[in-house]
Image (cartoon, rainbow, N blue to C red; front, side, top):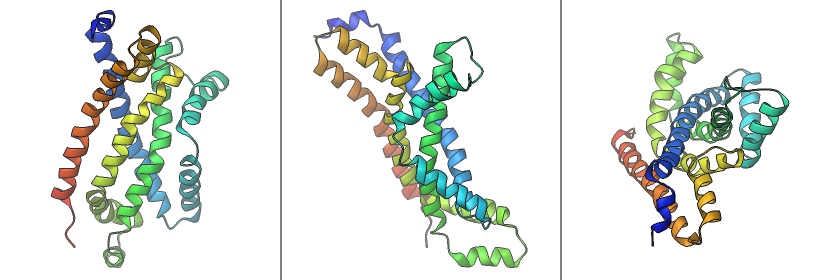
Length: 225
């Protein structure tokens, strides 16, 4: 039943999922940083920054991820010559461009999750901080964001799980992750259902523990009001 797997040794199968894990981790870190900055812009007292943050989130959230990923490859790389430091290495360049596209897309959802957490922080705390002379950035960094992050661990877990599944779109630009290997195996073998089940199980193994751990952490660190 599993004889066809002998043509795809474990390093190939596990290696494809390892690329998926790398895409997820790097994109999650970048999305968290950029999404936090966008959330800060959206609540900023500066109209220009607030307008940029709002426009970015509303535009990016309504563009399909496939379009963004393909644009990073065909647009940034082929038209504008953006190589991400790997001009002669197609696989490395495709991987880095995929991370860039995933960060650009996922950060919009991270931003909205964090902004919802910011809105749960009592306004009186920010007013008290202003009264003692703290600046907007100090209020955000020292008072608001620490509480906001604790209240949005659950929503951020959902974004992370969605990001893990969204990494399959990177196959569109040739990144050798799990979805690309699955496509190759389905094209070469007459075991579509079995192959699909194997890769579906692989993604469950990646996402289920993440949801359970972050769900427990969300309850553990929830802000008592």
